Image (tube, rainbow, N blue to C red):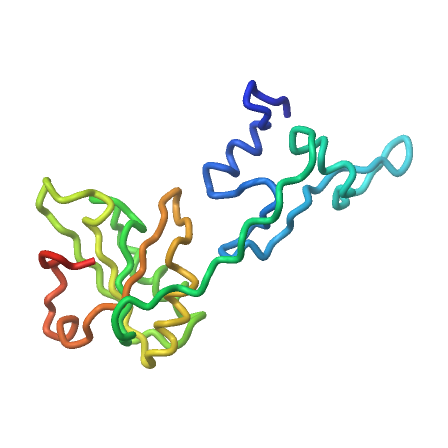
Length: 185
């Protein structure tokens, strides 16, 4: 693929829209591959796909030395006391909630621990910021599972959006008080 005037290939521009930057691995924690895959010819009619050599990487990324690796994501500052309930915001926008979303969220969050239930609350006030309008609540059986989920999900890209994760008051959740209140983060 060719480069545009900014020095990025079409593939790099697409990946950058999803949060990638040069020298950074793919994945929610940057744990994935940092070198591109390239085709290497083995004979006149065939080839194999291999990791690019580091010397080839400079030219593939637009020339020049590689930038230093991004700093490791710091531990998530815990604002307030952790609870068993995680509030996820900006995963989807208003009107984008479908019948499968609850099950998809429960399945994704089950890697942090046992999920008791997922509830989705959509703010219907048209003046409410769209990135805050869909509030997804995930109740775990244990607080430490909620902490794991927050550490992994906060700041993660989902469908081109940056997810915001916070702990939510367990008593408010059980009373069904899911709407935002003034001053709530």
